Amino acid sequence: MNKKEGNTMIKKAKFFKNGIWYWLFIAPTLLSLIIVVLIPFIIGIYYSFTDWNGINQPVFIGLKNFIALKGDTEFWNSIFFTAKFAVACIVIINVVGLSFAMLVTRKIFARNFMRTAFYLPNLIGGLILGFIWNFIFVDVFQTISDATHIGWLGGWLSTTNTGFWGLVIVTSWQMIGYVMVIYIAYIESIPTDLIEASKIDGANSWQQFRNVVFPLIAPAFTVSLFITLSNSFKLFDQNLSLTAGAPGNTTQMITLNIYQTAFSAQEMAVGQAKAVIMFLIIAVISIIQVYLTQKREVEM
Image 1 (tube, one colour):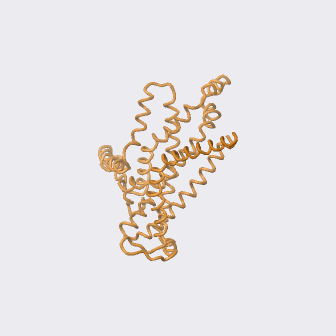
Image 2: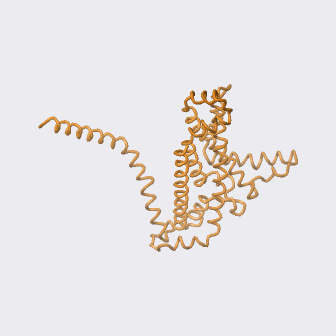
Image 3: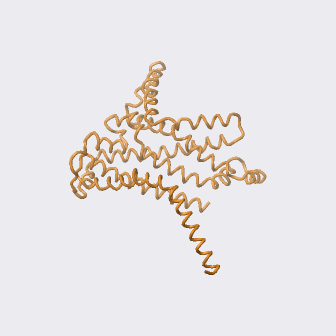
């Protein structure tokens, strides 16, 4: 055996050894992903083409469930409501989250306390958070309305408009701190000499942000927009605990509509067909969003 063949065998042995350890380390996560996500996802797609109601044996019926959804106005209204909600949350969460990140990365008093305070709402569970804010919107706001005679504070969750903004407020309050942490990570990675150079060149605070900070934290926008977009479309617990779709299912989001179809009406297959449509909507919008924001990163 010559030296070249010996080196090749050593490299193959190292590759095999490293490969074994690699697969051993990722095996638990990969197995969990397959069992919990991939297999149920495939089975769910199959059920969307059947007449399954959760009890009987599923019978394949083709595209009938999807065709029937064409006339389900409540479902399409929930998609429209969810889209409006997602747009409002994306703007508010990212603007306020970035503003907080810019604030707490400055050398100001109690900035560590402020970081903790801003992030704390993200640690509260969705249902608990919804019930807490339900008490605030219904009982606390009504008490203030009765004492001050400010009419718009009363019955806050009893109308479609106030119910919509109630959901936006609660979701934004919970997620702003999480998005803030993402922006902080990118802001603190900016070389200080670039900021100092811009100051020497006479740039004011806005010019520093627009020409130095913003281009360098562009990847954070890609991540943050993706997270806020997907979470807004998948929101369920706050919707259930705050309004439960009231009044008249006008504040019903797509996930709550799917839940009520599958578990309240016992139309599991129809609910699964709606879930497939929701998945396709989120996937398409997310792919477009990531493509556009990453393209923007390159241009910057």
